[in-house]
Length: 296
Image (cartoon, rainbow, N blue to C red; front, side):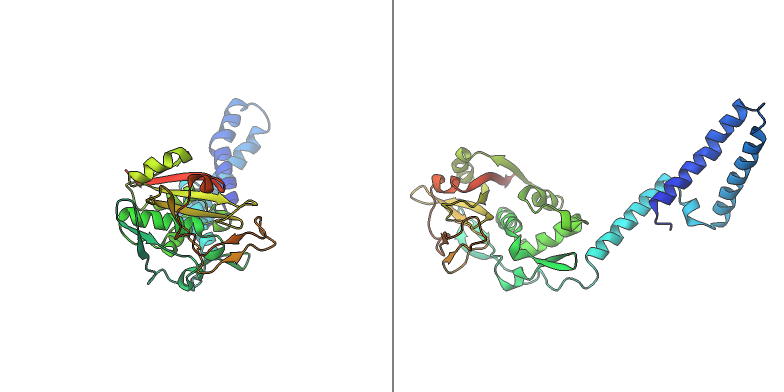
């Protein structure tokens, strides 16, 4: 198959000229001297197309139609994907990644917690400009979605599975958005019965009480306690004191200070952030958006 869409379009235009435009000119200007030349040109072009189509001499000729262009676009898209993700590129697997079920939702259901710092998860990557970009540097949105939908479905759909699905849906993965909305839209093509909507912080208490889960997009500032730069966290339960319980995708088991390259330089991110309850004011201090995920 001819895989050059520009050439295909040029042949389509030439066909239009030979079949439509030249005959109209010849008929309307038949008394002019140059019409004999146009007739010869038209016959030559038509014979060229006829011979190429009958004997399949030139694939760019017999594929120069709308259906051919569609097939070429699809072929080129597959080629692009294979260039970005050549066979055997994936040096990781989504197998054997099990959730931690030591947490409960407000309905006393298992909360499926995944931590993207686990070795079998932070090995996942995509490649741009011959450089591997690993999931532990960008995957909090994916991990948050994984925790939320796994919990609501009561079925483990781990972050690496979601990452691989998202890669298949985004041939130009280097320019893909790794935000909650884009990833959720990709996943719900395979799994239905869930909705995602942006909500105000005043709605969080009622939504969590009714069994929903809220993903908060957080951004660092000088008083940050949740992140050094940006992150996503899942609000999954309400404690007895009325505070909120958070699932943090990249939670560590040690305290660490934000580096000088981060927006929250000097702040300390505590290791017990998932054990404590958070007031709405504390979360609002860092949250920029709230996304509600619930069953339809």
